[in-house]
Length: 237
Image (tube, rainbow, N blue to C red; front, side):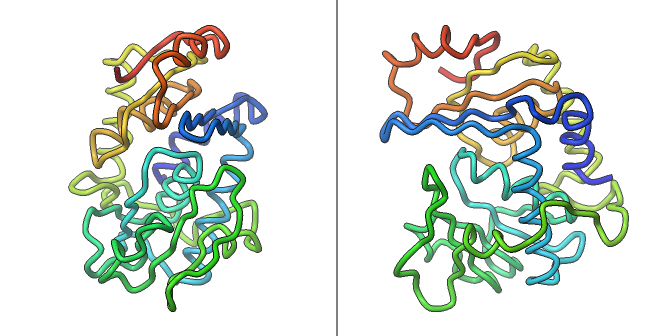
C-alpha cells in the first residue's frame, strides 16, 4: 500500500467533504481551503500525469523542491500514490517539481515541472523551453487513480525511508506531537526533507486531523487565526 493510500485513504473514508488543508499566505492575503476529496482529486491528477506522461515506475526518483503550499500537497500525495521515491537531488531524477520562479533548480532531471504556487492555480507564462507547466498539464488527467500494481512497503519513499518506514514515522510523530483525530493544526513549519514534511504535513494526515498552514506568517494575524480557525494544536513558532 502506498503512502498516499495509507494516510489519505482513512480520511476519505471517514468524511471526504471535510477540510484537509487551509493555506494562508500573509504576504499576499490569499486563503485557499481544500477538502479531503478535492485534495485526492489533485493527487490523482498528479499520479495519472506521472504514470501516463512520464511512465514513472515505483521506486523512481522524483525531486519535490517546493515550499509548504496547497499545490505542494497535490504533488507530494500524487508522487507517493504511484510509488515515487522523493529525493533531494535533481541529478538523475525522473521529474523535478520546482517553483516557477526557479526553473534552474531542476537542472539535471529528465523532466522539469514548474509549479506556479498561485493562489488560484493560474497558467504560467514565459517558461524556458522544455519546462512544463505542472498545473496546466495535469488538468486534463483523471480525478481517480489506481496503481498499475500494488506499491510494496519496502520501496523507497523519502530519502532513506521506505514506504512502510515513512508511514510508521508519520504515525509516531502524530503521537509525539499530540495531534489527535479532528484536531485543527496551525503550522508555520517549512517542509524540508525529511523532518519538515513529516511533522508539518504527514503527521497531520496520520492523525486524521486538518491543517491550517501559514506562509510568510504575520504574528498579528496569527492571534486572530487561532480563534477564527478553531485551532487546537500548534506547530512551529
